[in-house]
Image 1 (cartoon, one colour):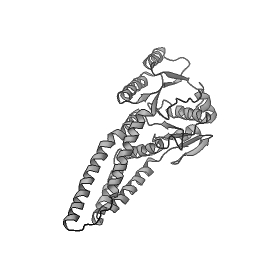
Image 2 (cartoon, rainbow, N blue to C red):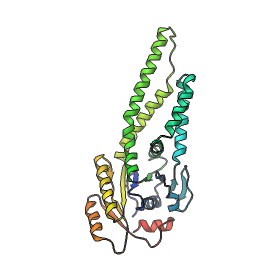
Image 3 (tube, helix red, strand yellow):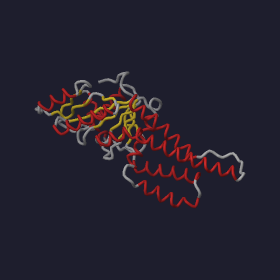
Image 4 (cartoon, rainbow, N blue to C red):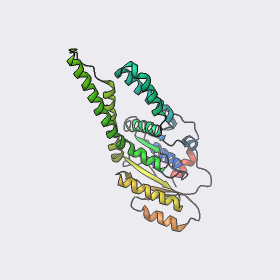
Length: 298
């Protein structure tokens, strides 16, 4: 399968754990790279098996793994620490020094709270999306299992109203400070508030990302011909469609020589509208560039 001009700029591969989505994502990224498209392949799955699939060591920054192909496994904990440092710097510029110890304690507590790593990974993903086109022609995302994928796709839209509310609260606080300065006759031009500027910038960034996920991206679900996996994949497809995301052809992976024809037929019928690619069960684990390329030609 060669790359086509109508290939989406951003492709997410998702599905239930253990269905081979990392392998399929790596094979698809190699196909795009082989066609000459500068491709970034990143993993948002905390399990981080992308390096194993490519038989190479990966880290936080994109590493060239083939002609026109770069891959990365972002470190969510490091991303959380960077975010806390940025917010702390903004707070020092905007808040009284005497309350900073309490602010730091609050930020440290927030960094350990559930969802922070997921949010930090979403930030990294948005950063990669902003580089397409430009630094990269295509972005391929090896997503976390289905539930995490659905939350990550929805996160920019979910966070936007919250950030907008924070910005309104900060605007009110800044206006009150300026009013007080005028009352006491300070009369000096007030400097821009760095915290407010960052909130507005974050709101705009989230709005762009939410629109981009529906306009330039598609999700390709990977499943294996088993009843429970098919049921979860059907639910995910329905949720994606209801949320306005584009569903690309699904991949029915690891089809044995003698499959359960009832389940395989049900999968074919269910996803006939968006299309399906069928990949037989390999006799060896498809890792490394050569085997991944063979898998993509299946």
